[in-house]
Length: 261
Image (cartoon, rainbow, N blue to C red; front, side, top):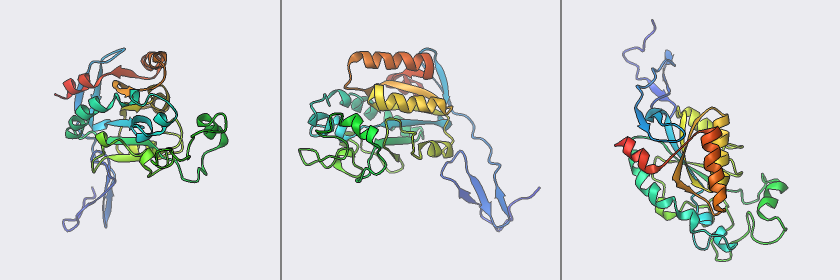
């Protein structure tokens, strides 16, 4: 059996601790053993679940100034941005525990190109249906930059949930975070098979990112109190019902924290 020479120091190829290659001048080792599972059991609906922390990540969607802050886009168009702030407090409690458990934290943010070159008319119409008003890429009245434009204040994550070094950021430009983004590749390179979902809006970007994850074969767990929407209440009710019926499981941050403890 080939082995590394005693003088060779294998180099890690790949960012994940649970899946990578080791390379040296005379051998590339692709036979890394699977990590020993770190299972936890979480109370959930429609059934309780057991997940492996080594193969789990949390995906936090669109917790951005445009959706969650005074002076952001939702506020500028007369929407209820306060409703979208509901996930902040539970996430402030949950994220430190997940980081301590070495669960990857992935921020999925809407971040448009300044020129909107990859946004077809139907997507622009979705947010500017009458051809006037404040839509994607338009300047905010209060000077917060352009709506959901990458690197603008408008598209930044709210200060209360500022990402830490080591967190992963992914930009999207559709309601689903898997469409035309590197999200699936990143998750697979991390060895992830289960995703915890949080963010806004429950019935839009959260739901459709979750359904695409389901279609790709991931185990999907919606954290109900870590999600919110400014849509009518029946939209959340339908989303929760559909997730439990068709796409995955529903639980809450307190249940996850209890399982981690």
